[in-house]
Amino acid sequence: MISKPGIFNLLDKLKMILQKNNVTHGDSFSICPRPNLKTGWRIPAIEKGVYLEPSPMLKCRFEYAGTWVNAEPGKSWLDLVELESVWDNTRVLRQLEIREKHFENSILSMVPKTHLSILGLDMDGREESYLHWKSDAIEPRIIQYYGGNENIFDNFYQFLVWLTTEK
Image (tube, rainbow, N blue to C red; front, side, top):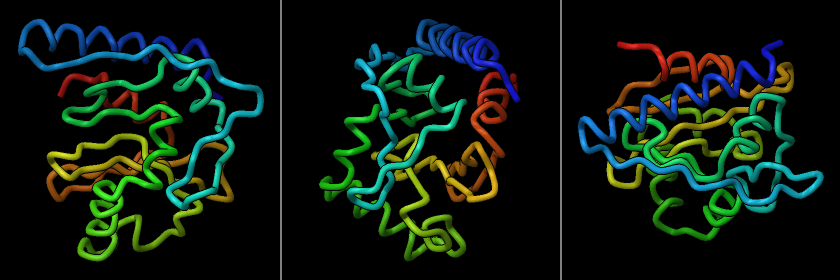
């Protein structure tokens, strides 16, 4: 099991990389302080009214910060309130519908929305990253879509390592 300090160290590293890119390339970047997390908080699924238990790694992500603008290139990580607002956001719902119906074998077409949540969202590029809760795993997988490509990570730690490794 990856320790809480290990996750926080990678989040700190990602923050430093994004701050550097902001200065050197003019990429917009910001982290909103996390809202106060209530006891028993859960993560909104894509299916309206459904909430998923946060895994140990995702607890770290939401304890660290709320919204991250451009946490992934072009994608913002949403806070818990924004994830709930997806349920009534026709623009986001339309984007998800397009992914589900027109991208063969996309996670949305293969997994019930009760087992999925959004991690990152790019409304302009129409790209998303998803959290996929599997019944046989403690940590959800991350499924990332970029320009027609799909990357799958076994957990948030793997995803952070990939994001913070020079390519």
